[in-house]
Image 1 (spheres, rainbow, N blue to C red):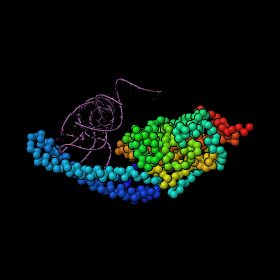
Image 2: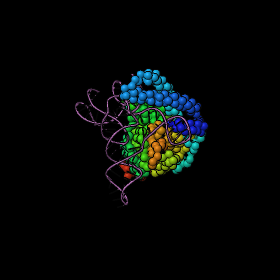
Image 3: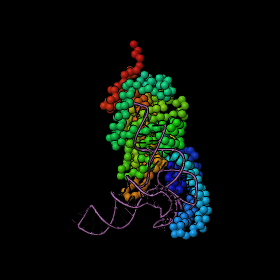
Image 4: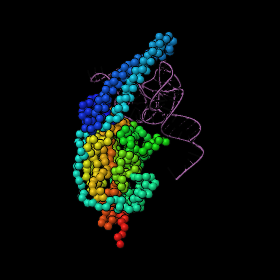
Length: 420
RNA sequence: GGAGGGGUGGCAGAGCGGUCGAAUGCACCGGUCUUGAAAACCGGAGUCCGCGAGAGCGGACCGCGGGUUCGAAUCCCGCCCCCUCCGCCA
């Protein structure tokens, strides 16, 4: 949610920034300004009447105590009561309409968010190899056919060594993050609607989200939702910031708009596990924190020996909550191209305002803080990158040495049928 | 799933139609006293919105949302959360 005061103070700047997104949010902003003026006027009228009602009401109370006749004041109060209600109702209606519209406005993009096209910032590693794709390499260790029988398309059974590899990846990532000050968290994955509004997934990505109508709960697409809500409604001590969390959870996505995209293998599935970073920081720190999250993501893929590139995402591709977003795209030899494996967003005060997460500096008043999120390891896509980049001619797969201490196999055997 | 009891300021806890933004205690901040500290005493302190250059003024907030009433922390309804007992259960 945008800061109403900022909108009032600098409407033109906000409008110009929003119009970069290329949607109709700049027009909705103007409607917000209109509604705001109407609301303030109604509010002022209602409060004036309410003040009158209160003082008259005090007179009645005092008069009764002293045994005076209060019928005249009481008559006036009876008519006042109706007026107060009517004006109060007007003010409430205006405010409700204002808030509803305000909630649909996306975050103001950062000035350095890429303009019309995604901007490739750098390529790290040798991104030229091609080879077999992960399904071929994994063989029955990724079992899509039986999973489809069980649950439909875009589900998988992960089996055998790949399970040990996943667990090693997760442990390794959590240990690394813990060393960098992130507290590991396993959050609920079923949440109320409010948490999705608070993080800006609603209204915006409704067709991506699983809903359980019997209990009116939603399956989260990322633990970001639960991590952001961890401090909802709280006023944190600025001295305790930054607060950093590493969430580990399954993630659920309907992929309803994905059409026939990425139907092979586990690149785009309805359920996958992910280690997610989430930071609560002071506003001046969020740009630096964003760089820090990106650096951790790069460190992870460097240590996993996966070639990748870093992309500054264009304004019109930012989600509603992000002011700026970087993706890391890993080189996938099986597809012969770069594909998204992580994403880190600076959501500035957008989520914090919706979730009412504030901080207090020494002796100061509460201020809205900033929140950021970033993928550490999205397991299924990271597995693809490891398999395809680690493959040898014979179909066996070398695995990065960093994972061995966490229980990963040294290598994966070939799933290819012997030619002899 | 069934039965009952609760949600009040940082915490504990009164209030149960008007004088209540709310007693009292603890914690907190400032002052007096003291060489310093403790104790004692005095004083202060919440969040949000509107108006105002500002001092300030007005309004809202006793889990959340409605309702009754001239007037609601107090009465009624719905929802959320917590606790106890029974049932079920990894």
